[in-house]
Length: 383
Image (cartoon, rainbow, N blue to C red; front, top):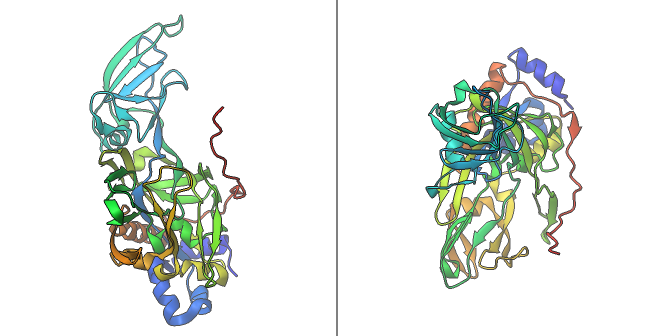
């Protein structure tokens, strides 16, 4: 048994043993779970995937004369201004009013982090204390006040694999799906995926420090649509899914190495977000989860040709080892697979986070409160 404070002391003294999730898997194969749990103090993870439920709060500061912004666009992308005089929230998937799917909120966020000028246009109804009615100017991230990403749903624990049994091509947020199940796509980094490594969220809660877009970020709540579940299979194995995180972090410290806009063909705009979580090795049970390899981590394959809440299941269990091999068996035939997430970037994030922990600049945090994990999934009731 170890505690987070004990591990942090070892980090400060430069004595902590820190491994990436892939490295700890190999050690556990060689030395076993018990010995690996004794030797290792921290395991780092990483993911770099499209995360549509992302965005940023921006404070522009006051100009002269004063304006209470009630309508805001950034490079022609609408932002929500119903907050205060010079604040707004821009969502990653919002589309440009002039360029459509070619440019959206995700691009504005990436361009701001890259240091580019952004065209700010604002209008107002005018008041005695805020008389100005129009504003059109260029803004940069460094010239603004507080600017932070607030992402309502990130780091999806275990997303399903998608295929298409229909006779036509489908353009979805899971990419282009070919007819008659000619391909399958998935979006989770498997054995590097943060929430698959601590599936019951023993060490993750409000206040947990994470790697977010190259900067330090924090868990502020459970993410939207956070409905943790466990599936038991007839062969005695199981899989976890459904957990999500709401995250916050300082945009001014982020990097476009880990925040990138994306255009998904005939679907819309999304944002690739780089997230890494360092896990304290508290005991053997947690290490056993941290050391689960791709061939022990499973998801399911759904038919995206049926646009309903309960899509048909094409295959109830497929391992990430099989998905990563480049093909899976589906309906008696071999089907090529492709990830939306980047394994290269996930490995890079886990390695960067490992180096930061080893150097002592990134300490672990104990959650101030557990996340609410007993939520019930409710459909929209149309009345």
